[in-house]
Length: 127
Length: 355
Image (cartoon, rainbow over all chains, first blue to last red; front, side, top):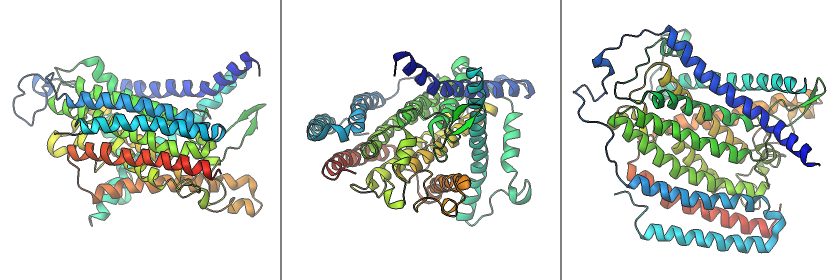
């Protein structure tokens, strides 16, 4: 197939998805907009204050939070990138034979090294 | 002309899929309360309509006409954006789900696949990618509310969703290995010819471990009981949507249920043969009614999806909520090694016994 035909083929496949994104956005925005015009609006300072189980809200919610969340986010990025590398390998697995199998076992071995390191360092603990 | 026609066909398909999804969400909100009620020896909602069947419509109308409160301290733009950001990815994931057999029909000289909006060759990656964007909606909603409950709920949710997304990604690799494709249409077609070909029990290596990991992880990813810590009502009121009301609250609600339907569809397509019947071919096809065989396929797909949806309710009625450290330990120290081991064993089995 010529390059331009291939491009056209791809465009025609992704075209419905683009349409779907716009339809879903329009549905969301449209519903909110219509709802905005039919709903009552009686704002009061008490009603607009942050909910804290009925007591007066104190201080701001923009406060420091545990660094654990950040560590797990980092671990996720590292491991998720490795998982993404497994996908193309899995698709062509039938065509690459023994070499592909051994190479990927080595790759998963490296994954395991990082995983065991994180485990031993206590990065997978939550206390 | 050509592009206009394609747009019209796409719009019709999108309207049909969104209609079915929204209708299923409505049914689910009622079904969940009914099933929970029956499991606890109650009747569930009974007031609106016969046996309470009109309850979802009453709920929807109520939320539509309720005041949308934006708290004084909130970041207004983010606060408005977050529900849409949660809803849109949950909806557009359905673009690559094959709801029925992959036949093509001629319409105005165009090839149209009626049961899938777009058969792209990276279907599964597309769903995973948009599932990640859905997490932004939750964390933005939690942060922009400027409430302590919301912030904690949003953070918990983000950490939980990414931890279990990793396991989902790993569990799927085994299926891709056996099918050699990322397209859900091709994966489903690879499982044709009877339930022994479904990837959950298919030779050379049954994906039963991957299936269990996927189902548990998808319960965690959709923030359902027993992994509903982001909205643990006894600690965090309502978690990331504590400050939301009216239609914006409804959007988070719809997004959660649409995500449940989406992960059920993916589970059915990946592991349980999608629209394939558990016997070779279709009964209608064997009877000579080939033109009507798609009805049987669609019914089988719906039955499998509803099985998973029932499982969600069943788990909710049965299991208590996990503690957060248990949740993270389970995800990282139990599910991840199982999923990884499954890939290695599947690869070795697939090498020595190719399909």
